[in-house]
Image 1 (tube, rainbow, N blue to C red):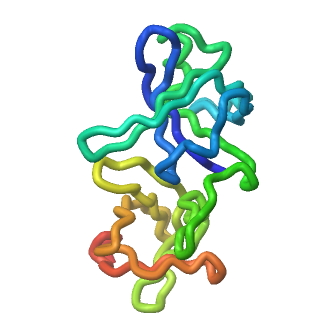
Image 2: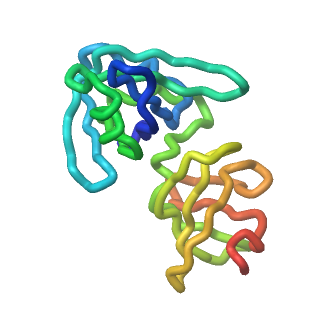
Length: 169
């Protein structure tokens, strides 16, 4: 299950800034081995040496250090990588919550009509961005905010779009 993205290096010891889609990294512990897919597609498994949630200026980030990544140069090789964990190890959901990684692959509907599919997620400045691909292969970024996205039904496999202009409909 897609759990986080690794961003930039932090400090001089190989620590990496990470963004956890759940908003928390409490389910990850020192000694856990995480599957990482680098932006070039290379898959590796790294052992967590330390992990710490940091907040400030209405933002949330996690600082994570892996056992064998000890320099900023090594850490930079992991920039834009995706972190995967087994669903059993994922952050536990509260009632009404969903795993944002479950949005990938859902059909997007506007006024009851299928208008595209969510193909990826991007960490945006104000919100998560859903990358939506229409039937003509044109792609758009849809902010995952209540003003733009209505009901999400994981069982039906649908996301309700509230404003068709965002996909140039």
